[in-house]
Image (cartoon, rainbow, N blue to C red; front, side, top):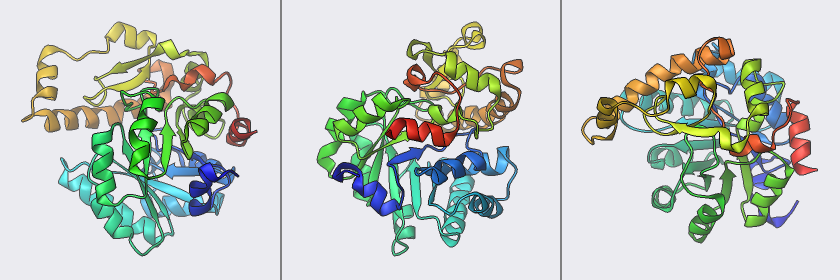
Length: 322
């Protein structure tokens, strides 16, 4: 183990500085547990756990504990436009702490209340960020590290390259995790060589035997190249990286004029994005279960370029670090 990534391995108690990013709808409990058991850290996505995979939250965490005793994490989307959802996040955070979770990844809001809530528990809070402005706000909130979401990521990707994002955020003095574009050993080593203290993978772990995603989804990832990844606003109202399937080419990736106005207008954008996000909960869930027979909304990042087969989580991690 090098000093470069000793923070993650020492403070999280994991063998490799590899995080399985929380994914809706793909973060099934078995996948989360498999990543932790193989020496990384799997991160629970609460809506996936409860809405998609039908576990009561506390019971879902306890089920994962029957599969691995190694550290797991929890993702919290803390954007304040929905008071009800924010309260749900607070409930999930409290339960997770009671169940011994020591690693939290926050996104989309101010994580100050999460930092205060975990103070004294020994837990770590890392915050998703796509640029220096939001990163500074997270630093001011007291987070322990940053998940640096770059322009090669799947799902809600950033706009900045991994190299520039590292150079922009390194002066802040916190541990940085590279999120986006990690699909093979070469990209893993390149991220650590840049100075990142760890990596976060999503797409690579969807194409695993432990992930419950439909085989059509996994095969689409194996078949895709980096040029096949496009951005669409039709899922959540903000750009999401997906595979440019036949369905996407026929439907188009841009929203219409009225929708664009509602999504961009400061007075209406939060409500419009909430509408799109709620609708996408059902569409993505159906795509996960039915594959290409439904709608080919296959979220993925440019790491597809390094993925040539579906294999076990243990084999994926060993392939990265070997």
